[in-house]
Length: 316
Ligand code: DGY
Image (cartoon, rainbow, N blue to C red; front, side, top):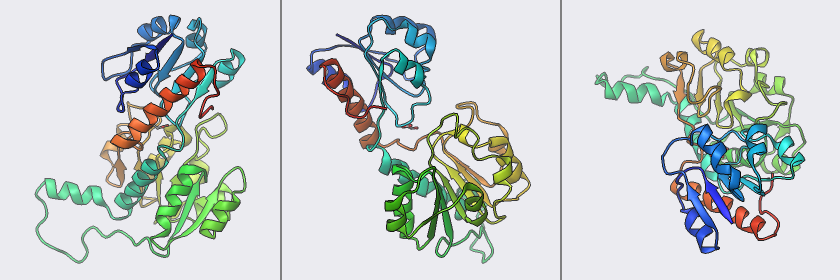
């Protein structure tokens, strides 16, 4: 049986798949496989190990003639038309669990970068503008005693809260369901989104992207943020109405924002590059050697299971 891997990945999932008797074809270049080539190659694939850069929409799914599983090498699966996949009895898997810690680590890095103004400090050093210690230079704010609002208290939200707890913060959360374990672990209260935006000093976004969460953080609720507050997003760009946030940042109506994800990746809004109070990263939440290898191998193991007639490990 044939497996298509759409990019060379850490962890060498092709080796594992070959060891299990599959014919593997890997798109060798380190860029998204061109759409035409993708649509052609999937025609005779029994399984596809895909990335978030491949749009697996109706057109792509209709091109599968015998594909049983799309193993997306990401926890997010907004690149896949899940409803249509279900209709066509196509199994879709993602890679939860293995990237939780790496993404939470990066979220904390973004938070610290924003509250301690690391970008401005780093730039000052590179531009040779540091002319000595000054008591009023680049003042940020303490985390201790502040209120953190976690939007989406699932695995990554929870791992982020766990890390932040060590800084002595109070944690509140917004989630569509009540999370008892989260509340017990962090002595936390569930609030509605408006309350969270109003009360928080640090807001961290951890929602999956869906029709319901698209622009859930928008002009109206962003305008409720404190002038001294920051917001960071390591989930998906489209959850946040970027233009509205940029407006607030320009007018200095909030302290700062940290982005790992954007509405129109990789073509980010050029205004972001000009703002002093933003910290920008290129969607690297899960980018560690260990995590990316674990994601690729989990995706490969999902394929091995399904093509051997077993249950997938992490079905969507
Ligand atoms: C994911 O897993 O959804 C990330 O965005 C890519 O690692």
